[in-house]
Amino acid sequence: MLVKNKLGKVLLVGAGPGPVDLMTVRAVRAVESAGALLYDALCSEEAVALAPPGCVRIQTGKRGGKPSMKQDEINRLMLRLARRGLQVVRLKGGDPSIFGRVGEEMAFLNRFGLETEVVPGVTAACAAAAQFGFPLTHRGEARRVVFTTARVEDGAVAGDWRMGGDPEATVAVYMGAEAAPAWARALMAEGRAAGTPVAAVENAGAPHARLAEMTLAELGAAPLRRGGGPLLIVVGEVAALAANRSGHHADQRAFA
Ligand SMILES: C[S@@+](CC[C@H](N)C(=O)[O-])C[C@H]1O[C@@H](n2cnc3c(N)ncnc32)[C@H](O)[C@@H]1O
Image (cartoon, rainbow, N blue to C red; front, side):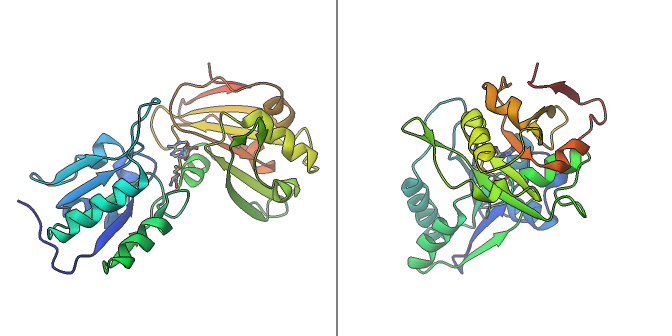
C-alpha cells in the first residue's frame, strides 16, 4: 500500500549509526509510514527493512568506490516522488544535520514549495563515545567538541585546524581516515600536543565495532590500516578513557 502525502511534506530522517535500536521512535515511525524511501549507503538493511510493503526504495549512495547518485539527481527525485503524492522519507546515517547535506536538501525542497521536517539521529561521535565508554566533554579536560571533516587538496590538507590546537577541545573527525596523517600533523602545527590520545572507531554502534588507540604523533606518522567500514577519529584527552568494552576488538595503533 502506498502512503499518500497530501501536504507534500518530505521527512529528512536520521537513521543513527546502524542498529535500529539506536534510531529514535520518531525515525522508526517515519520509515514505517514511508511511501518512498531514499536512503544513503550508511543506512543499515535493518533500518530499510522497516519500510512498509509497496514502498518505493531507492539507494542513493553506494559504498566501495561505486558511483553514488549526484545530489541534484536526489533532490529532483524527492521532488518528483512528493509531487506524485507519496510520503517521501530521506533516510541518512547518523544525524542529518551533521555532514548530511540536509541544509541543501531543505533549501531545494522549500524552493519548490515543499515543507520539510528533520528527525534527528544519533551521530557517529556520540555512538562511538557511548560504545567505548568515553565522554565527548569532561569536566576540567574537555570543554568543547568540534565536529569536523578532512580532505586533501593538491596534496595538502584543506581547512583551518586552529580550533583543534586548543587542548580543551575534543575533535571528532568525520570522513578523515584517508587524510589522517596530514590533518594530524596540521593539528600539531597548531599546537596540539604530540602525545594527545586518539581513538579511531570503525562501525560505531554496531556489534562488530572496532577501536584503535594511538597518539596524535602516531596518527601523523603513517596511514591507518582499516577494515572498510565507516571510521570516525576522536582526538582529545577524553580518548584516553576509551576502553575495550563487551569484547570489542581494541588494538594499538591500527585495526588488525
Ligand atoms: C557523510 S558523513 C555522515 C555522518 C552522519 N550524518 C553522522 O551524523 O554520523 C559519513 C562519515 O561519518 C562517519 N561515520 C558515519 N557512521 C559511522 C559509524 N557507524 N562509525 C564510524 N564512523 C561513522 C565516518 O567518518 C563516515 O565517513
